Length: 308
Length: 257
Image (tube, rainbow over all chains, first blue to last red; front, side):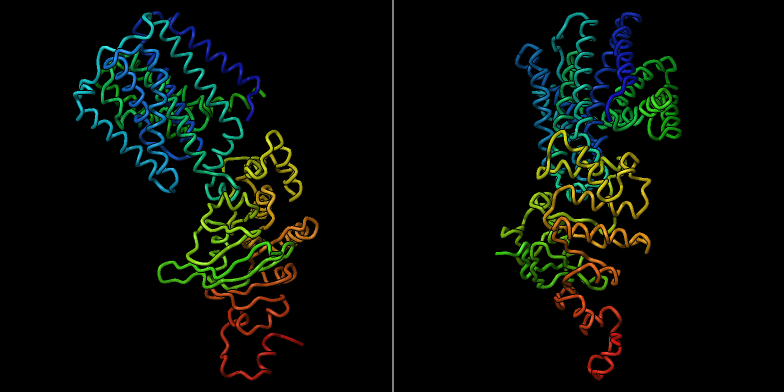
């Protein structure tokens, strides 16, 4: 599917909105929320690239996020390495994790990949607690150096990485590679009969997905200046999946919108204190019930079909 | 060595079920061969063994003199053996054109930048050219069968395995599809191995028949000879009391004038 003029206008408008938002809203509190939202955007987009396109659900995306974040933590806190290097090392480590899980399980049919991701993330969470001398246990690693000292500058740095990642993922998804990934989702046996090495494409996609998630993890770590075992939790993985569903699976840009929307919504509902989760959950149920294909990507497609 | 495909002593057991038993046959280049047999005779299993979807236990399969043993299905396709499935298996969620683009991306035939035009040409060839941009989900069953064939052709096979291409089709749909298959054999010189239950169409298409029953090859021969073979009649028309009938009754039941 090629990008039409309206897509470019929409993408530019979204980008301008994200550039202007911290300038208009100003406070460091809001800039912080938006920075985290952008990290979630990277995680949701990378989840969508592998699982949304191929249909092989990944229930442990936090494995790559945690791997990236802890890599940043180790290098910076334990070895005192300049934080910029985290952004190089985190994707590499996350890709190594993706190979360990993907190589044995993506060759198989059935739920093995989903289960292996789920359990690997949970195992890593326990391992960070058990080897507390190196990982700081429940407290995690504290006192990471910021990459940039100005919050606003850091927001734009994360935005830059988000835009670059989304562009990369979208270009691949629109290429013949993306066609093959969607074919895998359609019917794996037919893909084999079409002469396509299904396993190769699935593993390669998982590696790309992991690299982006790991980079997002490192960026998140250097924003929070702290990493903890909660970065490996199932809840984080599930939240990302919800964001993808709300955004519209398989579209890459939809999940980014879903991630930003839900991150901001969570914070906006803070005023409701104990009723917050109630309202949040109701909103989710409402969206998923009435718009099972998601909110953002289907709406955009409708808008596009009206204008063209 | 002039056979395109040589199968020798092919065996597959599923637990206690001997699904394919000592199957041997050869296919010459440019031949059109049918596999005949009642349900459960092991025809589709044999296709799955030949195409690598199920590994075989013992035996050899040689394509152009090279063994296909242990190869993954996609590797066998890239050697030049394509197949269709008994139940059409389109890539749901994609357009008809994209469905054919996928096999055009197989390493064997990949030509970047030409994928789309090749896919469109293949759709024209099977008569789906004007439906290229429809979502595949809306195609009627007969068109899905044509799509299956277009996808198999996209990999430029030397040998095409068709698994019941007429299954589920009405008589008005069968004739044009049979014409298409015949033209693939005649004008493109494609070697074809076909499984089919629709006896009339089948017998008109093929030059040679491999008759199977209970996983075994009963006999191999020309269609006209096969339909007179007692075990084929047995399997298809019903069990006769082999030890009792006189020669006349056998002849009569086949319906010779």
